[in-house]
Amino acid sequence: MTDPPSAGGAKLSFSRQQWFLAFLLFLMMVMNYLDRQALSVVAPVMRKDLGISVMGYANAVNSFLLAYSIMYAGSGMILDRIGYRAGLAIFVGLWSLFSGLHGAISGYASLLVFRFLLGLAEPGGFTGAVKTIAENYGPSQRALASSALGLGTGLGSLIAPPLIVFLSLRFGWRSAFIIASSVGVIWIPLWLWVTRRRNAAADPPVPLVKKLRSIPRNRKVLAYILARAFGDSSGYFVLFWFPEYLVTAKHFSFVMLGKLGWIPPCGSDIGAVLGGYLSSRLVARGWSPLLSRKILMSSAAVLLAAGVMLQFLSGPIAVLLSLSLCTIGVGIWACNLHALATDAFPRSIVATVHGTAGSAGAAAGIVFNSLVGYFGSRHNYGAALTMFALLLPMAVTPLWLWLNTPMDTEE
Image 1 (cartoon, one colour):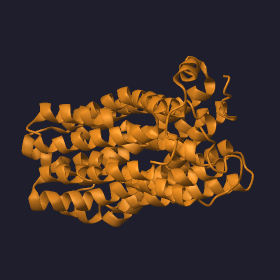
Image 2 (cartoon, one colour):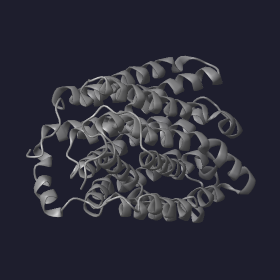
Image 3 (cartoon, rainbow, N blue to C red):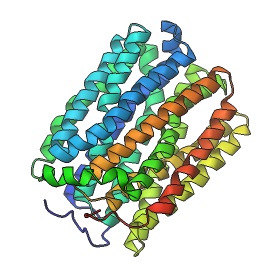
Image 4 (cartoon, one colour):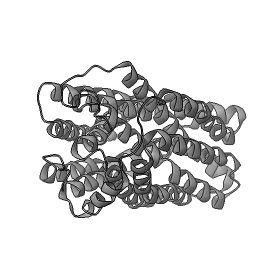
């Protein structure tokens, strides 16, 4: 497999092929987050329609996260074996199908089943994107390329409230899942066409199997796993609980949620672009890629904690702006977290390591989500917000302790 462009240089600009790839990864993440966030937006209406409690909703989220935690590692192994081109086409097709099935939810049991199926397919989006970036971009380009993922997740989260509320009020909440999932039908052939000239196959499987044996014992891998175990729940809280928090704790109406709920997700887009640009700029100026990522990730932890502390403010705009500070931190964190994997681990196992860490993040997310559901059912969102504020400081600590140099191919 050929080396990625400018693998050893300080080039920030993208070739035409790299721009196409980044744009398609951006669109894929918009779909990914629009599909998965549709439930959180319709949750207040759907719970009332189907008679599902807050803890029942938390269990549905956990059903997704359980499958997510199982398949995140599995998707990484699949993508390292079959390559990102075929792998992403398969995973996008599956999650689009499973998301559309949500339109047929008839009760609590079917909700759990469909969320589980969606959780099996969606991890492939992130692992496939990280493998694509690792194989097509140089060190000084990767954080900026990874910002496309943050932009996509941010835009998906941004357009979800107004779009899903509009569709729900106009056609019923079931229509939101069907319409949102249909975009994948257009994306897959476009992806296959753009990547047709690239050697998107995986590395030989035998060396991969040999390297996999050392992964559980490697401190650098452990540091990344712990960073995701703590840090991923910050994104899950934004994704699954912000709409419920605004309605339940801050007394937003469903219509207000549709009109104003897009504001905090804008912070994720700002953070993704800002975090990716600043990190890539530091690398272009000669800073170590790992050091650059960790500095920006530490800044993200400070921003998120500051945003939580400002939640004592009253008034819708003040609440939304302080939450936006949190999402700026989450955006900065996420784009550098994904870039960090491409810098720290060999390309032949980067999807596997990223997926394994993602599984740990999803498993920890189940615990965190259950605690949020417990506190939310008792109208104690203060405790949930305190946990939210502590996530990123705990997540960045093992990176400073153990992940200071890239993993050697012989480790």
